[in-house]
Length: 435
Image (cartoon, rainbow, N blue to C red; front, side, top):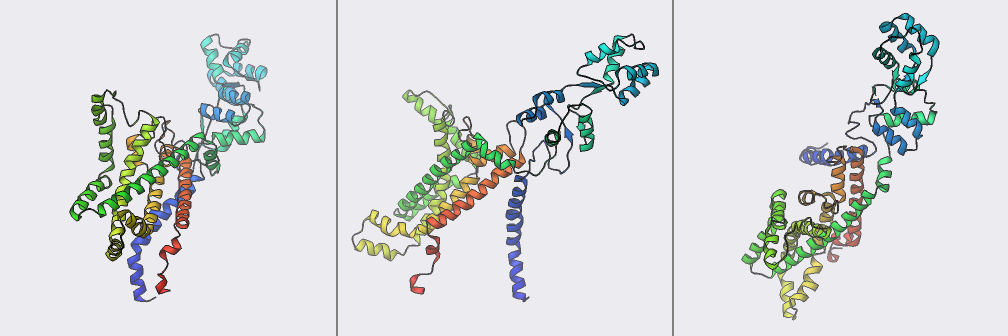
């Protein structure tokens, strides 16, 4: 390999590192996590144990497991077995243990009271009621809230309960009781069936559509109007409108909260006209959406304004002068000269801001946190809440990764649609004079 090629690879190494480790690797890992049931309950390590809890019982019933059998898993069973007899012999003597073995060996009891009733009939029994209860507890067999490190130990304890489970029921119980994560495709089925995902999708469509229309439209308006202003005045206006983009999101949103809270500027001003104070940010779904669209729309419009203004300045002045000589007014210049020259900037800004709106949620998180009542919880925020900030305390990493992968697919599809809609091949084609 030539030295020039090695030098080129050396200069490209930082970019390749960023692409592989900061873009491709996270996407690949997210895809892998999306095919697991990984959560804060299972942990991220590959190992796991087996444990039947109240939650396990509920899940079994929801999956069609026989209710009577599931209820028996939650109950204490008292079984006369070798381990219990050995414990009785050590605590109360050989004679009592042998009598229990002769009279009750192999029997099971649903409760301690039933076993105590049988023990009272034996001649070698302890005379103290406390000792009888202690004897009964030596035969107590329960798997509820008991952790088993291996599947074999778990199944052995389950078989001791004499539940009469078949192979299918045993497999279902083992799978549900496993506390580690497993490979699965259930996350995507869950996404398709949960009402909350449908609502998040609808919220995202509303959010992206209205915010994109406002930011692109307002950005174009600012760029065109400032183009016809004197240079100094135009620069001042652009600087002011660019502030939302450069301000830290926390400070920017706090300014909106100061204005929209029930004790904020807007309520204080409207109080002079008899309007009662209210939280204009969270008073209703419509209020929340208006604020969310404006907060994000002004940020997007500031970027669009800069890009569109640069593109307009790149238009040869001779074209504008010639149009004025031909009698074109400002609106005709905008329609026939400026707007056709902005197809490429509009494509880039629309595609960029669509992908940005699909994946970002910081301004919504800081302003409404998806409220009121999850009315403004978009897909990206729903993914964050599911995987990293769940209200119930159970962080579902696998489901959150699956939700993120849906966003990746939607983003790629949106980019392809934009390329087709704006006829990308014609935009990047060589001028006809060079063909």
